[in-house]
Image (tube, rainbow, N blue to C red):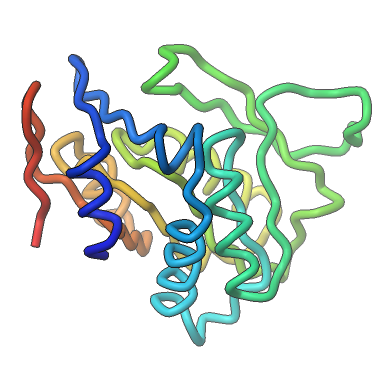
Length: 190
């Protein structure tokens, strides 16, 4: 998706430890026109798959997932990283190691909203080592729902998570796939 790649090159900032900051347009301050285009692109790529629910993880994936759900005309659901008093005690749960935060989260989704028979598209902002997606896939499997695939805005291909998931038969569609990143530059896969 050229519009996304252009934004990354113009506004993205590279930090040590393979951190790409895109918080000026994707996951802190949000460019709604870009997210609308991202949602449309995922809807186009997964058209005809019967997607009836979009699943993501809080917090950075929520905006992307909401625009994607709007493009599909279906609900969006996000996995929470903490149990709250207002969520049912009937939940699916999985452990996820956050690459960016360097800590393990117990993610949860209420059984009320994720059911057998759902056809789920998982959406997230980044794919690095794949831990967040593996946790979300576990929730889908626990529910007996069908995973249609994973829509990723930016994949760090050099970190191997996407390749590992694809080798396991998971359909992963990334809008910008970075092959190489140094402290000063990045290269997209064509």
